[in-house]
Image (tube, rainbow, N blue to C red; front, side, top):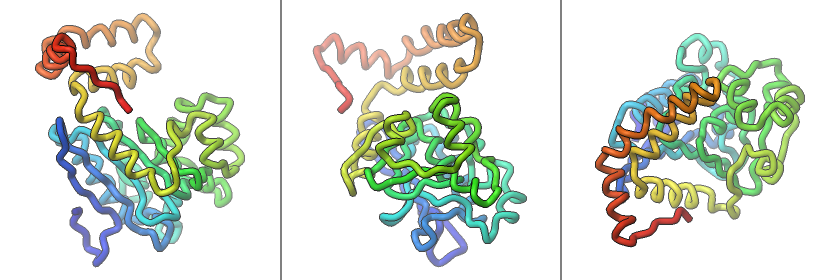
Length: 261
């Protein structure tokens, strides 16, 4: 668990060793305020995301909020100035760190304002049907500065991103699923279990090809077509010579098949 000066840490972390890798679970632990992020929570989140980025043993990050009401309701407005001044990595904590290993985010309730921004940092985004999403900071005149104006247009395209950003309208989990903000809807109370199931399966897959493809997608998203194809081609020899790919080919030749469920 993460060290903290508070009796009850506002962010908890735990490593789960599984077949083929390790899952870093990151929990926003302020359910009494709908997991709103204060300065201490932001500092601990930044610490957790740097740990995930830098520790090669960690394969997948799983990020969720404590309790059954909220993923994260955004920044704790009572300490907003302190948060903004303290963290170069983003006021909500590590939100300007681009992760090149898989991240799964799970919303079981409110994902508002900065909380919606944090949710968007998941490469795989899950939600339970009672979850709701909003650029709720529109009501208070607080801008999106933790990736919202960057990730929402890239994930949803202009047609869906701009109405969310301009209006601050709340949308349901079903609507979020329809527009691509959510990859998969789970049953009530099953979001975290499904996320762990997916994380375990990711750990079982050959690692080097997965990381190379993710990096190529991130790096090439806004390159000219020819340059993006050249960036992708750089992966071929290093990945095909890697131990994990060689084991994967051996499994294929031996008749072992893996389908992600």
